[in-house]
Image (cartoon, rainbow, N blue to C red; front, side, top):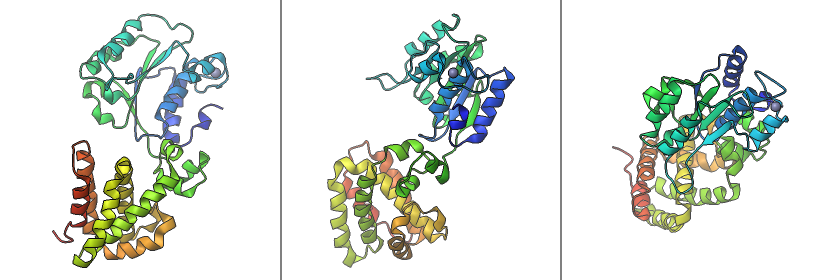
Length: 322
Ligand SMILES: [Zn+2]
């Protein structure tokens, strides 16, 4: 047990353990990187190492009273600050609450650890308030800020923290987590969180519809236009699948780009590769890039009340030459 059970990002684990051994652990840390690669798990592991009664200082036993309490979310010195129910941001009151406890000694453990997740959701005034804690931290208090992109945090906050950039896991590392379905392994795109939560059957069903749409849109000449419209009507009707559809389309276009650029080892949808090759042969890279860019426009306007049918039709009609 201990840090050895963490899969992926071994250099970060190595750096953290070296710091823990040095006994001069930074009071502010930022764990930045994509969703589902273990940033929060790693923050909890760090908190366990800092308070473990058995292993340490650079590891944890995962079974002592302290480790068990942290695993159960019941350790009084390890606190996670997140967006509360019915709120959209981490508000300043939550940060003030943290600051008000800084002068007190830990209740049970050696160190107090405050995990702020997602740190980029701090309300405008909350982040500057946090600075006070980061500027003059008591000896035994530590902050771990978790975010997808460290650059979304205030520069003044960033400059007082050590930043650790987490990478997506490799395909082998995802398999190492016990994911056996090769479709899920590849679709997770390096996120174990995603691999565990994806619904393979639903994804495959949507992929079938969208692949059909792309096949129709690829030859959006007059004769194919009718067919393409039929396919996009199916998509537009499936309102609850719209977010999934956007993701699936983005992955399909990405795969087609890899194929047309001659990098087949990067293809995610290997189970339909033959069909993909046929489609890739009918689409230029320029056309695919245009489609990918258009998808980004769609994604950013999804919250607006945009007519889905129109969006899909327009995408099929993007001219192959600019
Ligand atoms: Zn322990």
